[in-house]
Image (cartoon, rainbow, N blue to C red):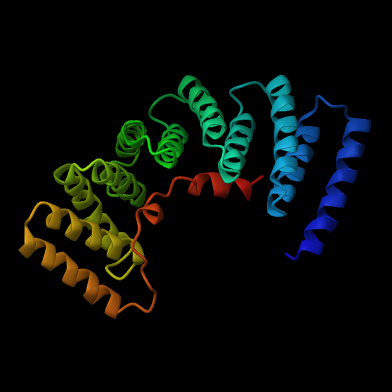
Length: 258
């Protein structure tokens, strides 16, 4: 959508909110939804302070009307946390993700995927704050839940293994990093294929771990795998740790599901 189209949508949403406030009152789920949708539009327009204003209005209504355990309340926490993260305020983002996790742990338990998502997002915040031991703690929690839920080989398990491996890598424990990268790789090869950018990145990181461990023959083996995969893939694979940590995938999806 163009900026003009977003602004037209915003005007319609503000009008809908005024109608809901007048006819339904402030303490109504539809009024909360109107506030939340306005927040979404402001976010799309990159007016993050205004997005926060309306997300927080929606959260306050949802807590009063729907209660803390309602999924819409958790969604509001995710959205506020994600917006703070976008604005570069990781400590405030962390607070809202921790709030979402507390709700999920209490009402959904430690074997639910939403709880895993909360743990993963908190791990991502700690990663952005360069607190790698705390990031590792939450990535391990997310991995444990996902392994219990999926049991079979699933891409989310591979993502979690890569997150855990990445933290060990950054902390200089290359043997542990290698252990988790090697757990992720067979899943990626089967689910994504050998030419997928994430799979190729795994070849790179495995090769890098072997290099640091001075196993140069294995390092060369995985470097060649990466080169062969790139030669057969038109997509350019950029090396860099940040691309490996898919910390806000679920959060981004939530933005488009309200």
